[in-house]
Length: 295
Image 1: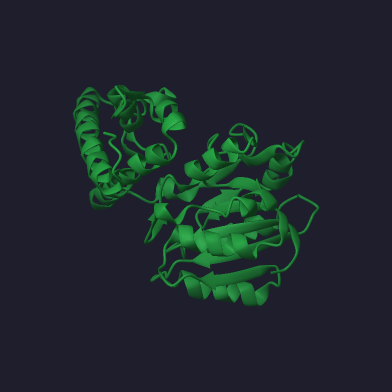
Image 2: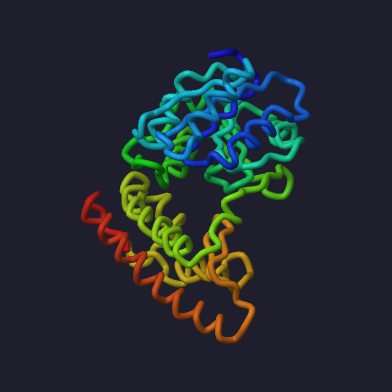
């Protein structure tokens, strides 16, 4: 692995329409240090891997790894072990960074106790930048959270493990800017239903996170009676109330139904209630699988 000041690790699968622009913007940062890009493809079927290979051949600061369908989390861990940089940015292939993103986010690393800086959340996620040594010392992500094609709660688990060792994080939503292209890619009812199911089923990992971090999990999930995630919070997530809107949406910014008419608002209420029941059913499945009750 080429030595660099910052390494973008881009975990991608079937993002052939965005990966080239993504890599280009990573390399065009105003940051004066050396930037390297490692594309980790999880057995794409849309030609993303071929595009990535071409990008790597054209630019010595781009490398490519194919994880052969082992899952995003395992792919990221492989990249973390290879990393030879001071900082490491965990990315996806459909994220577009503003030109001063790296310069802005690195300005928050003002002491050694800061493990990561994130524009996504205070527990990490997409576009989060880590001190490479710290994430390597933590042995990267827990592969129990891995599933083919994606993964969930792996970043929160990693953040909690960092916090347990005394490290801190910084949340930079208003300053370190990026766009997430998937917000625009779900125009049809079929795709909306497919996206909704994909977001729903990954919550089977919630009981696993709670099992690993019972004390932090109580506050993180807002758990009542020791095993019930506050249903108001689930409803708020599904309906956008958590951010002051009223749309059937996801925390990733994908709006499935806009609450711009009275009829749609009624539909959103009904769908929001259905979501609460569905997500608690998914967590019950996860509770049985991971032997920790959370619904």
